[in-house]
Image 1 (spheres, rainbow, N blue to C red):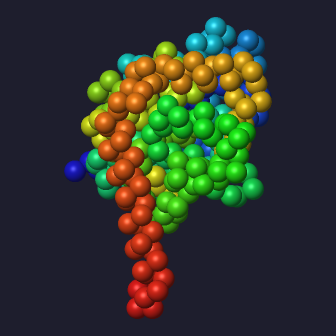
Image 2 (spheres, helix red, strand yellow):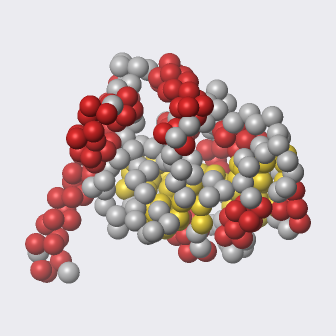
Length: 290
C-alpha cells in the first residue's frame, strides 16, 4: 500500500488574463501540499504573466502563437517529468479551496475506475452552473440556439444538462468540462490527450470520451469550485465560427447520426439519474431513513 500522499500536477492556459487572475488560481493550488508542479501556459501576446514563475512550484511557458486551449494543456501533459498521480486541468477564472482538492483526491483514490472527475461548479453568486451534459447529437446545439424553440429551451436544457442529477452524492457522467478536470495520471500515461484539431470548444467532450474508453467519468458534488462563465460563442462572431468548426470536427470524428456508443451512454446516464431521483423521493417519504 502506498504510504505517501498522492501528488498532483496542474496546468492553466491563459490568454490575455491579468496577473491577478492567474495568481489567484495558483494560490488556490498552493494551499495543498499535494500539488508538486504547476505549469502556466500563456498564449497572450505579452509576457505580463512571466513573474508568476517566481514560486519554485510554478513553471511559465509563453507561446504567443496561441495554438488553442487543448494544445496548451498538452504542453504540460507531454512533459517527461510529469510523474504525479493526478493532473488538474484548470481555467484561469476558477477558484476553490483546499477541501476541494482533498475531496477529489479522496474520491478518486477510493474509486480506482475514476479516470476523470469534476467538482460541483458554482457561479459567483453561489448558484449551480450546469456544465454537466449528455453526449450531444448533431441536432443538440442548433436546436438550443433556434429562436423559434425558445419556449422549449428550458425543458431541453433540463434533460441535456442533467439538471435533476443528485447534488449530494457522486454520480457517473458522460462529459467533464475543461474548466476544471481532475484526471488520473495513468490515463495520461496511457496516451489520453486533448485532440489539437479542436482549437476551442468540444475538446472536453472529446477528451472525456477518450478517457472513458477505459475508465469512468464522475461528478463529485462534495467538492466545489467557482467559475466565471463567459459563453463567448454567443457574443463573438469569431468564437461562433470556432465553435461551428469544432462542432463539425467532433461529429466527423465520433459519428454524426450513427453513434451507438453515444446512444448507450446517454440512455444509461438518464436511467441512473431517474433511479437517483426515485431513491431520493422515497427517502424523503420514509421517516425512518432520516
